[in-house]
Amino acid sequence: MDGTASSDEGWFEGIDRDDEEAAAEAIRDGTADTPDDWPARAVESGFAADENDYYEILHDASMAATRAAVQEYERSDDRQLQHSIRAMDDCERVANELAERVAEWGSSLVADPGAGIEFARELAERDPEPDERRVVELARRVRDLDDEAADLRASIERTAPEVAPNLSALAGPVLAARLIALAGGLETLARKPSGTLQVLGAEEALFAHLRGRAPSPKHGVIYIHEAVQNTHPDDRGSAARALAGKLAIAARADHYTGERRPVLDEQLRDRIATIRARKGDDGDDATTGGDDE
Image (tube, rainbow, N blue to C red; front, side):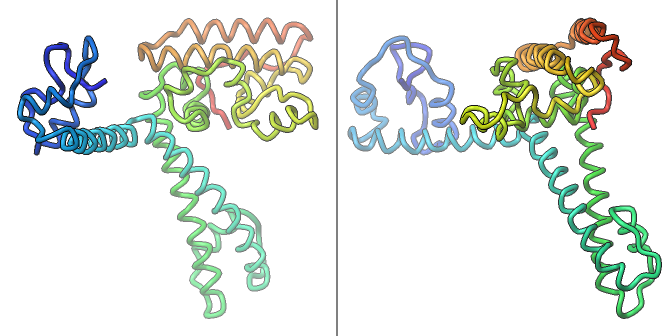
């Protein structure tokens, strides 16, 4: 219901009908204690010529409020983090694909060909012969994409701890950003149960399981976390559940309070140590904030 804080006033009270920004703000932030015949009230106050005019103004104000909300969401820190991690993944994927092409092409022109990004970087530094010009230019594109991926990773490592301090401390900045992106935002991640967080990134395997074609996945992208990877295979499911539980709490703390809670780090270390002790795993105790790659 559109309205202001008092049921005695409509959202349109004191607003110039041509002031779209003020109307949008009233629609977005206004409330009403009780329902009322707002179109009639608007006509009586002189805000609208008739009921149809009122609804036309209301429609325009609602659309303006929606546009403002979308812009605010797109500019939010966690949304920018999502764009960054996806862009980094794209740069890395394309760079590796092109590096394969460069290696295949370069092997026909260079005496000592190599492979991968490293070879593309070496080739990019050459002063090319006429028949090498195109492949060297392609190698330079690979180098630039690899550099951009590195810059994006550095930006994520700086930004993620500001957006989600607890999640970044437990998962590492890059994995934290990836979880936020997979969930569709920090708020959405904070609302997910730990079991859902545990299998984020394993949707294909989960759907296959639901169709009866595969076992239930034990983990999604959190598999790359040290607490899971360095635990005995038989206990990785338990480690993944323990990690997901703490990550879920961390996401909620980040979204609802933003306060750093070091106790989560300690609890995760203790829990992973207990799980590893079952089989005397040789892996080091779980550490927080480590590299997630």
